[in-house]
Amino acid sequence: MKTLDKKTILIVDDTKINIDILIELLDDKYDIIVSLNGRRALEIVDETHIDIILLDILMPDINGYDVCRVLKSKDRTKSIPVIFITANTDEESIDNAFEVGGIDYITKPFKALELLARIKTHLNMQNLIQELEESHKDMELLASQDHMTKLYNRRYFSEISTTILKLAKRNKTNLSILMLDIDKFKNINDTYGHPVGDDVIIALADLLKELSRESDIACRFGGEEFLILLPQTSIDGAYAIGEKIRQHVEDLVITLEDNSPLKFTISVGVAETDLETEDNLEKTIHKADDALYDAKEGGRNKVCKA
Image 1 (cartoon, rainbow, N blue to C red):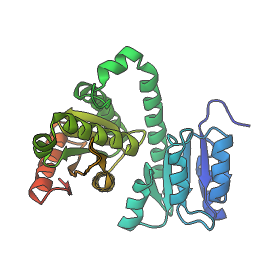
Image 2 (cartoon, one colour):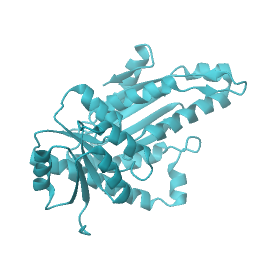
Image 3 (cartoon, helix red, strand yellow):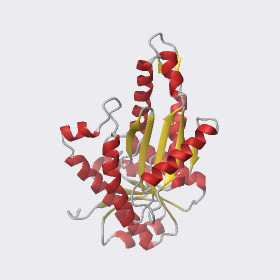
Image 4 (cartoon, helix red, strand yellow):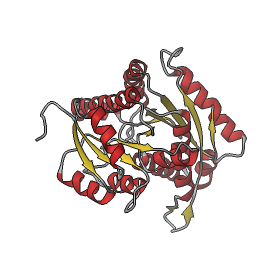
């Protein structure tokens, strides 16, 4: 029976020894549910409230990436944090973990203190998100939104980023920023008119909402420029997310009133906060802005790291 004051962790792994190790590490702090394959895991999340999922990548029926894709495609399960557990440490595996919506990854063999700390951090972040959502009444939400895009506005970004930076410092977790800018936006306005320019901005904002993880804070920073705050994300993970967004924008087609297609691209700058030296995010934003400039100078439609 589920203990009321404990969070519930779903462990998905087809290797018994891994499950035994995880249960031994976690059982006294959390309620544990185990699945030996991806299909059963998807059934469990439909039947039971799960607070966080530890998900193996290599499984015989459905691999972990595909399980995560299904979870993130459903309203009921898309906000459950997924931490991948894997023996793979190559960059492609890590990029794929973030690409499909994972919030973190932990390598095998497990380090007990690291495992416990990361689970605790992500649960704390979920609690913070839930508290923030519950505290936002309709008028407060309107005050925090950009009226055109319905993303968060610059003022709200400044307020929430202070809270998230404090949490990252306390828990010693990575914090990164993406700065995005629409390439040759003035040409779009001059060629098609400002209403079409507005449509392009809205289309990009809608895509950012679709691709952002539950913990991310996406904001319209000004004009055709956007910021995304990425908690628990290293610069490499942020780069992978930025590249995913860039590719989706490149594939996006806007249909104009005369039924002709309009395509556009973005440039992205990526930076990670130095938690030891930075007391606010101004320096990180400046680094991301410099990286964005490098992307523009490098030919546009690029992602560059600071």
